[in-house]
Length: 228
Image 1: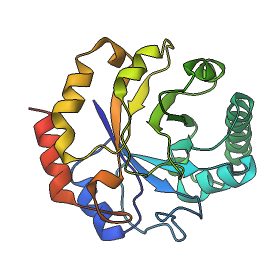
Image 2: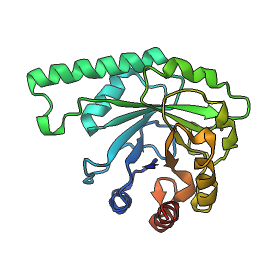
Image 3: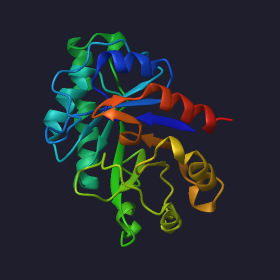
């Protein structure tokens, strides 16, 4: 079960989080978010933990620039990005990497040749899962979050049973206001048929003391209970 902790910003908090060895740490590059990262934290993150850049309706050029500047491993698209956009982004990134290999613009030890793309879908009871079909060939992971007034981080839950309508083959991350009291709900979901393609969970606002500041003890408790 992969663990993604999103909306990080504070260096000391990130260092503490690294000690819990999540699989992904997310950084939000959407300036209307209260978790917006204006200055990327100067902190050592081991290569075993993937750095995720979260974008909302951003240009391909700016995303590739951020990937290069901050050595991102994963791009999470939280807006109205089309499947074609995802494909073009992957190609543009590949072209940039190819050019940088030739010019040694990026030191070999920090190059990221493979780009992982996560597409987020805002889900409620009226969501049509056929919308995901176009993205099957262009994205590596889906993330099903609660539909709310903001692009993620709303702290709202949805009825995970509607994920039985998802018939795709692309693996997904479960999200939606998950907090330390949801261990049994998550474990129950993972025992059901609709979790067939679920490979992990996304954690954010449910573990915050303040925007971008995660309560490490609550996270530690949750992960310990989840892995019993």
